[in-house]
Image (tube, rainbow, N blue to C red):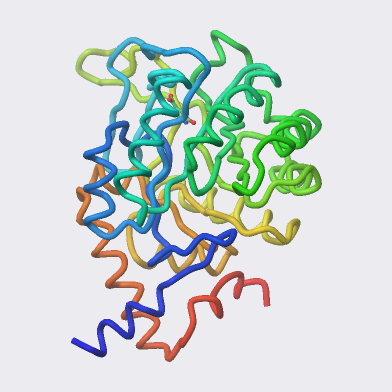
Length: 313
Ligand code: RRO
C-alpha cells in the first residue's frame, strides 16, 4: 500500500504554478454540470475544465448533438451555456465548496472586446486557470471562423486579456484545423499566454446513418474527437513543443494509458481525457493513472518530468 502511494506521488504535476495530483484533466465541453465535474475528480481526474462560456446564454444547436462510433465521437453542441454572469457565479460557488480541485474556466467569443469583458467577470470567481477557447468548430455558420484560427488575431486576444487576468494563468486553446498550429502557439506565447491547450476537435467532419440515409447530427457537420484523432493531436503537441517554452495541455483521442505516455513524450505536461469517458465511463481516469504508474515503475522512471518532451531528445 505504502509503495502504491509513493508511486502515485510520482504523478504529481505543477502546471503554471498550480498543483495537480496527476496529469489527467477533464477538458472543456464534455460535461456541463457540477455533479459530473465532481464525479470526474472522484474517479481520478486531477482537475476539471468548465464548459466554455459566452457573453450571453446559449441554447445550442439542434439535436442530435453528439454521436459516436467505434473510432470517433462527433459533436455539434453549439456552445450550450448559461452566459458569463451566471457561469462566473457557478464557478465561484464550485471553487468555494471545492477549493482543493484545480478548476480551469473557459471562454469563447466572436469579438475581441467580448473576451476582455468575460475575463473581467471571471477573475473575481477565482478559477485556478483561464482558457481562451480560440477554436470552437461548431458556430461557423453563425459567426464565421473562430478568431483564433489566425496568428495575428490569436495574439491580439491573448495580449488584450492578459492586461485583465492578473495572477490567473492564461491558456490558449488551439484548433488543429489550421496550416501551422505551432506558429499560432508562438504568437500566443509572445502575447503573454502562460500555457497552450491543444487540440480542439478536428474537422468539421460528418457521419451518416446508413439506415436513415441521413447525417447523424442535427447540423450535419461537427467537430471530431475520439481515438481516431490521436495521431493528429500528438503531431500538433509535438510541433507546439518545438515552438514554445510554455507548458502544454495535450488532448485529442486519448483512450489508453499508452496514449497518455505518447502525449507526454510529444511534449504535454497535462493530458486532457474527454471522449474516453463516453467509451469507458468516468472510471477511465483511475484506469489510466494505474497504467501510467505501472509504466513508470516498470521502466524505472522516477519523475514524470523526465518524460515530458522526451521524444524530442
Ligand atoms: O460546444 C461546442 O459545440 C464545441 C466547443 Br465550444 C468546442 O470548443 N469544441 C467542440 O468540438 N464543440
